[in-house]
Length: 113
Length: 116
Image (cartoon, rainbow over the protein chains, first blue to last red):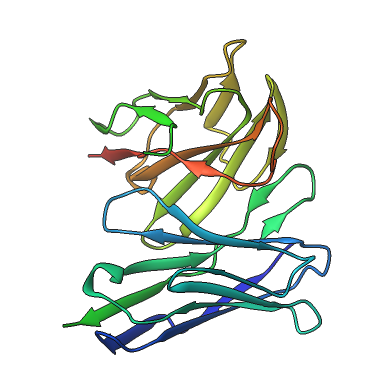
């Protein structure tokens, strides 16, 4: 099955700085790569996703880049704001017998004003 | 708001008891997934149903079972509860009947289960 590693586990930045979170996966058949944001006690919320026919996707201050050869994808947040503080999860889709998300361990992002 | 609803929000019960968690997917979504989030195990997939049929199973204990009904809502049944079953249980839905990306999963607000 799919193995997912996410780094770093914690990340602290100053407001206005950029943040980058990296996710590596093992299954070369994976072709859907979402990122979720989760605030304390709340549901995981999809913030951006990418499919393997593209290398980069951007949505305002958030971007995701994908390197299928190296089997990793990264979340980039620019001009960070205090409301970006949350736990972020990568969750590549495992298509074996259906389509379950395999979540990384999570990155706790803290944006200091 | 994702359009996925879950009830109840909170559930407090005792060891050995049985509970039922309910999920209504987004309108038109055919797949329902159940995930468990605990401090030590993170977010883990439990089981998937597609249009009433079980499609995939993950790390789901034998004491747990689920089903999806003709109206596409789903229930997760947890029995012989243990302290370690205390967690947040999320359901997610995908596979819109009307078409569009079938792989994007939207999560409900979760049910927080506390076993005392």
